[in-house]
Amino acid sequence: KDVQLIYVPLASDRDDMLSRGFLVTSDAKALEKTHLAVFKALHQDQSLPGNPSADEMADFLARHGLRRADTLRALNQDALSQRLMAARQFAMRSGIDGTPTLIVNGRYRVLGQSSVEATLRVVDALVARERQAARTP
Image 1 (cartoon, rainbow, N blue to C red):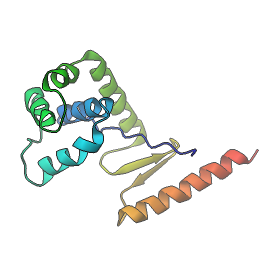
Image 2 (image 1 turned 90 degrees about the vertical axis):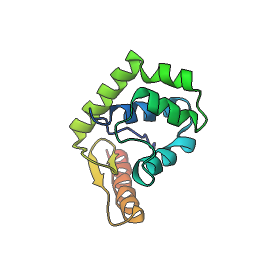
Image 3 (image 1 turned 135 degrees about the vertical axis):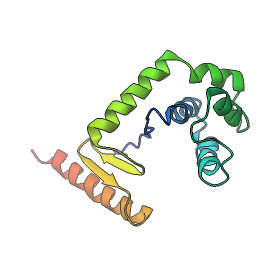
């Protein structure tokens, strides 16, 4: 109950439109429909270019349930640019240079281990440590 998982795109100049797409689908509460689809399109069937244009991103997301015109408008909003800048700054402060990376309470950086289960075991131990530290006066 006291742990919150927040996904943050690893925003870079090269992946800017992918990061924008992530934020737009997150805002639209459509990550469950689109996140794995984007991953597969990029890494398995290469149906989405690694650096898509706004039109390509909007077309792709429209095929997965988002309205193209709304998506295109959202992809180009100035407010989204500010959020990407904040994500870049967070990644730089946290030393994030790849995925998966998990940050626990702003103090610990957990890189992908040998498996998802191994990574989550490390995170669980760090969460327990942070809970204990919060209880200790």
